[in-house]
Amino acid sequence: MKMVQKWMQTLVLLFFCQETLQLSSLTEKTDGERVEITCAPVSKTKSNMVIWFRVQDNAGMEFIASFSTKDGMKKTDFNNEVFSEEQINKNILILKAFKKARDSGVYSCASINGNALVFGEVTRLAGPAPMTTTTTTTTPMTTTIELTSSTTAKSCKVGKVDPTASCELIVWAPLTAGCGFLFLLIIITVCHCNRIRTKRCPHHYKRQPRMAAPGQQHPIANNRLF
Image 1 (cartoon, rainbow, N blue to C red):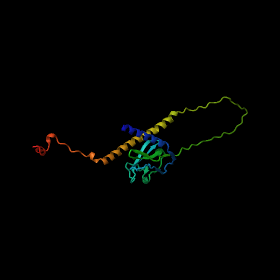
Image 2: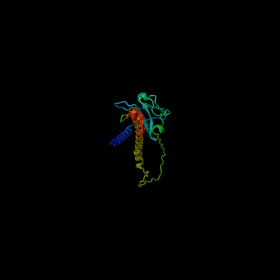
Image 3: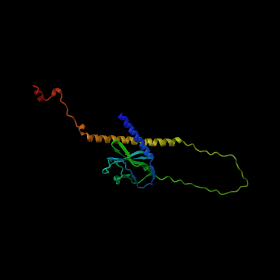
Image 4: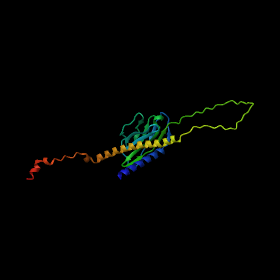
């Protein structure tokens, strides 16, 4: 029964994550621009750790880093070439230089408070849309003696558009990102719970003294019987 409840909670979290990513607003940035990403999970009890992650448009799910809420120290490896944690105490992650091909996607954070997972704000970054140029050609007006008219309409041939291509992208992209994020959260939760259990019950991990065999008891105990 407890295992079923765990899976139900996990599915609810996955659904909430998908809905959060879809409700994010789009922010356009140019290549080389410095970007400040703000995210602060709001909860009644303050968590000891905040997890930052992003879902890239071209690469999928990526774990950025986890930071302590007390001193802002990194708890995992951190890519200093791409990000900066100088304002992480203010719940701000800095992207040093935006690149459309690498950094376009959704950014967010989350914290674990006991059995609850709390998400922060969601920021969607994207590069500027490609410029489309239209060329107009002018033809000189000419008059001819003979004027011909045709009453037959010419048919326009339009290439067939496959509607399943866009539908598959809309369905599989969030599902793949959600599964990757779910797997990452399960690993972090298990490691976090094991660490808490070790700190609270250290006597469970002490080695118990071995019992002597019945025939090898201490001679003093045998002498007391007579």
